[in-house]
Length: 372
Image (cartoon, rainbow, N blue to C red; front, side, top):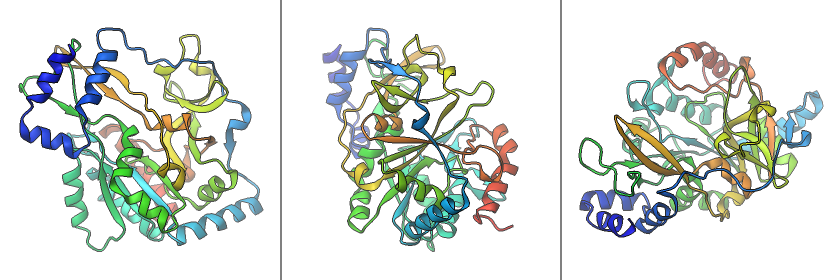
């Protein structure tokens, strides 16, 4: 299998080869993953002892007015100094919203998700850097969109990795077109892609202290001086925002793996562990000390993901950003998901966007991202 796949990779169209090289594709990496993972049932479950998080693992934002004032003052000082960067995961296409670039979909009142982030760093972040992690599918369109905002400063894009899909028996998956099918290997690309860009290294050298990482469609997860101050106060390099589960909500959960607080996706849990025991879940919003992220060196787990195109199955290997919690000490924080204080407003399709528009506007207005 390995020799046949190696021959296919060597014979790729030169234009596709150049495209892959621009996105840090390593043929040997794919060959190694294929050899280790194909031809057997995916084994994505963690090895080790998994327990529910302890009460102290999931913190609460303070309600005491004096405490809040102190943390907000600390956070505002950081934001005014431009020492917090906002990193938006903007590699996704809105496949359930017309197949366009998700960041360019209108979110509210004629403003796209990208427009809202630009307003956020200007009005809330006092000009803090905004970095967009793009994909091969979104990079060109987002750079064009930013070019139409010449007044916006301190905004940059950096592309995530690109890989190729495989058939279950280890050949390149070609689909109906007959051409090899590429894909982005997950938001776990962020630390490596950001390192390649040089943005974080320069930011740290200039005194940058922390970054906020969040999904492009979650307009609740904004720069917030209270959370900046809270993150810096507890001393751990990572804060991970979680929210209460409602109804049948499912997703990655905070847990303890061999005694360490981590985020684990449900498909990684032992079969004997019931995720419903944990009543909060991961929002994929992280506050990370900039130097810790810059110096992060970790072995990533690539998960075997099986998907379907018509009658054909294909395999792709992906990594998840939440795995940084396995290598950087993490404090979870429960944040609101209701009302003007909500920090969790994800939008997966057009119907959900229509339902959420009133909430998005309420949140954005209360934070002065939109005018009342």
